Every structure is written in C-alpha cells, then in structure tokens.
Image (cartoon, rainbow, N blue to C red; front, top):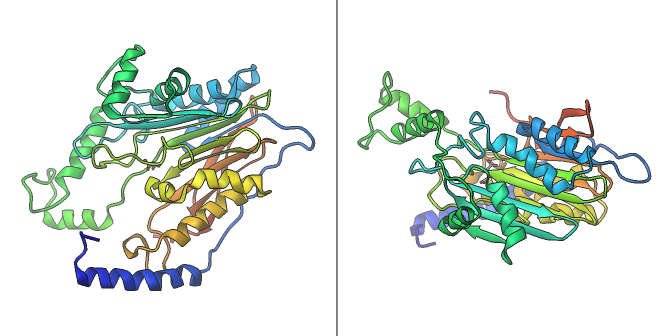
Length: 361
Ligand code: ASP
C-alpha cells in the first residue's frame, strides 16, 4: 500500500472489484487431455516430469524398474537437466539473477518417510537437488537458504564452481542493455532506441524449471523440483520450487504434484498441496491440476497480472501422479506437454489439459 499513491490505489481497488466479477464472467475454455489410468487393481510404477524432462523421466523409470527407491530415481533424473548447460532454467547454465549471479532453488519429498528438504538461493553448486536431499537426511530442518545453504553444501564436500555459462551471461547482458534507453548501458550493436522500445513491449520473463515425480515398485512416491528460478530476479528472491506445498508436494497415501511457471502464484495458492488434497478427495490427477489452475485464475485479481479479458498474463503448469500410478497435467494456457515413462521403450510426451487456448500471434 505504501508504494501506491491514492489515485493508483483507487484505480487498483476499482479493478480488483471489477476483476473479481471478470474472473467469474470469463468462461474457462477448459480442454481435457485425459488422465491416463493405471491397470485395474494394483498400481503401475511410473515417472512423470515437465516437458524438459523426457530424459529425466526415462532415467528415473530405468532405476525404478531395477528396484530403486523413487527418491533416488527422481533425483538421478533431474541431475541430467541440472548438469545440462543447454537448459537455461535449471542448475549449471541457468539464467542468473539481476546481478548476473546464478541462484538455485530445489526441494525433495520422500513419501514413505514423510520427510522433505529444500535449499533456496544457493550459489555455486550445480545440483541443489542433492543438497536438498541432504538437508532432509542429515539435519532436523526442512529448508536452508543462501549463505547457510552454501556452507552446508561445502560441509558435505560439494565442489563450488561458476554456474554462469557464456551463453547465459550473454542473455543476461542483452537483458541489461535493453532495460532502458536512459541508463549507461548502451544497446547491443545494431540496435537503436526504437528497437529497444519494441523489445521492451514484447519482453516476456523467461521461466522454466524441472519437476520429476516417481512411484516405485514398492509403492513409494517421491518428487523433486529444481530450478534457477525466474530469470533476472532480485537477488535472494525465492520461488515456489523449494517450498513444500507450493512447487512440490508428496503424500504417500495419495500421490504427488509438482509445478513449473510463475512461482509467486503458487506460493500464494499453496498449489501442490491443494492438488494432492483434491486427489485425496477423489479427483483424477488431471482434474486436480485443472482445479489448481482455476484457483490461481480466481485469485489473480491485480490488474497488472491480467489481460483485457481478465485472464492471467502468466502461465503455471502442474503435473501429478496418484498412488495407483495414474497421471495427468494441466496448465492455465494451452500448448503444454509433459513427460511420462512407464518402462523401457515406454517414454513419451503427452499433451497437458488447459484452461485457455493461447491466442495465435
Ligand atoms: N517456478 C519457478 C520459480 O518461480 C520458475 C519456473 O518454473 O518458471 O522460481
């Protein structure tokens, strides 16, 4: 409130009022992709990941097939993407904060023991998922952040390195040099003020993360979400990914949910815990994910976050499995896919359900 002047406040208050009406007035164009059902009777082991996790799901399922605990499997899966410099949303090669420093967030949850651990704003360590696991196993805490997380990782022998690749640095530099025409950073070669205006108009915050969920042969369910977070964030910003209940949640009796996309929305909606509760109450994984999307739409009342029709200007994606091994995924905007593996030769990308069809440009 103290950052708004009175006129802005009245405008905002008016748009909040109109916004709540709009949120109800704009119909969802919900499209179902169809929850994939497990075999009747028992349960089917499975690994599910966000669309950048095809290899992660495959790796996790290979391990599950050979008898591994789902937690070992999902961490080994996401490590592939954390180590990949080409994925600019996770681990080594992730896009940095506004100072050009890569800060990572991750969380793990282990269904059979009901335990979880996370790290946030961790610098210089490429596999925050492994550090999160140690927080769970070797401390009585759930979340360690910043300098404390780095010291904890060092104590466990993690090697420090610069996580900023040249490619990610250049992207950060381009972002910095096109922030404004009024600062001392000159535009990249060949760009003038008009081009910068166009860039600013179309600028979208780059997002991404990997989440991986697994159901192992003993019926154990685990999950991991790991990310470099929102590109060019304010240093120290923590998203939903390392927070149990927001970017990941596991309940061995029910299932698991993970998320990618705008973390602030998940933090305020406790999305992944809510998805698991919907499944506990009988919803399919896909329907539970769709309900979490609707909850975010209904809670997004600030005008700056909505388009002219009252729909969120951002996306959030959810992935879920239940204790039978059924899986589903949904996002606010269309076009999403998710990775599923049910064994050797059975790894594929499936369409996610959605609330709104993305307008074609
Ligand atoms: N959820 C992540 C965060 O907010 C970013 C993303 O998935 O795009 O940090």
